[in-house]
Amino acid sequence: MDWLSDPGYWASRLVFTRGLALTYLIAFVVALRQFRPLVGTAGMLPVPDHLARTPFRRAPSLFHLHWSDRFFAGVCWVGIAGSAAALAGLVDRAPLEAWIAVWALLWALYLSIVNVGQTWYGFGWESLLLEAGFLAIWLGPADVAPPVLVLWLLRWLLFRLEFGAGLIKLRGDRCWRDLTCLRYHHETQPMPNPASWWFHHLPPRWHTVETLGNHATQLVVVWGLLLPQPVATVAALVVIATQAYLVLSGNFSWLNWLALVLATSAVDGRVWAAVLPVDPPADLAAPPTWHAVLVVVVTAGLLALSWRPARNLVSRNQLMNASFDPLHLVNTYGAFGSVTRTRYEVVVEGTDDPAAGPEAVWQEYEFRGKPGDVRRRPPQVAPYHLRLDWLMWFVAIDPGYGGRWLPAFLRLLLEGDPATLRLLRRSPFPPGSPPAFVRLRLFRYRFTTRQERRATGAWWSRAPVAVLVDPVSLDRLRTPSR
Image (cartoon, rainbow, N blue to C red; front, side, top):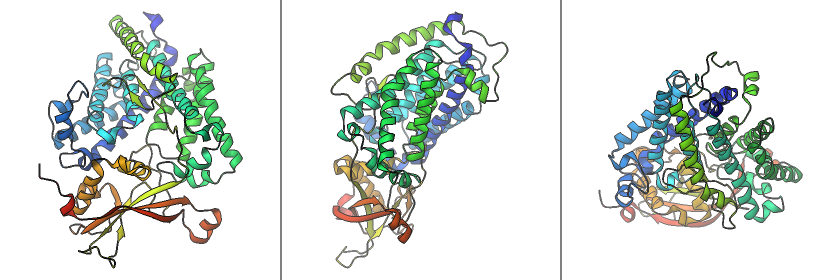
């Protein structure tokens, strides 16, 4: 079945799968380092509680078969090992059956994590990684020509990602239509990076150009992905350039990185062969019949599942970042349908004053990524994902986003839980001496002007707005032992 494969995309497959393997590696490392305080047995949203109320059919996961913190860590380590093997090219040299097994294992392990991750794993890039990871299962190793149908499914995924994001903007905030959103976005985005201050201070006309460029790419250029070469390559290179621009201007976990990686699969392999020191095997073979049949069946199934995401694109009530099946096989995407004009930040404070009286001295906890100390330059975090920092950004917009996890977070701080403190950059209290009370205050943050930056050295200016949570002690937050 030679007509079902295209040797010309051999280098494109290599670039895409190596980038995807790196993304998987980062995702499993993030899960390993953060799961105990977030979803561990004694965490803020314990997995055992979630499993007790969520049947397997709604959220398939290995953890329905067995749960323990050690088992979760083991799943992460297996994922790390498999991702590293794929990144190093070891899976490329394996037989086709081994390729399918390894990539299917990575997908199943990460699906198991996402489906018990609850609020912490409710981001669109989780589904994006799973959908791209499922398609990688069928691409085949280095000695097999890439299947054409899977290559087109990757383009279809990238099209939905970009076009969905463009439509949600046009249907959402008015500032996307009057081309002013990026006058605010660099300052109010969830987690600015070291360059965000500079992007914010670009001339207003450049912000208009940025917005126009975004619309042009997501609403017009992406249609080129569905056309033959060389048009598809030109469209993919434009997407790569715009995603690289977003990488430079903010911290969005692996969303932009993975979108960029997806676009590499649509670039003509001759382009990669011209710029990379790689050569395809001399005896590149067409996939065996059984594999070609599997690819056809998988393609038919995914196209059938594409009906609801495609319908969602043209719906007036377009959903953003939604999955229509528990396996996250075909999803809908979108980002920043609305842009906040003012930045608010939740500042967590503690005191060792046993009465938390008017004379109490309150000290701030410092987060790893989100703004706190006004003199600290915003750090580069992405493609790593700081889940707690991201959720705290949502709490500043609406405290209701704190749900059940925010009181648990405060309780763990009052207990001086070491795993929770490792999520933070700095605790003002020494190990073993937790505060007597904690509270949450809301501040209005803005980037300093150029003059303020020169005079004070500060990146941010802030002003207190309100107390979100009055001082609370451990007695008020303690939960019964499990």
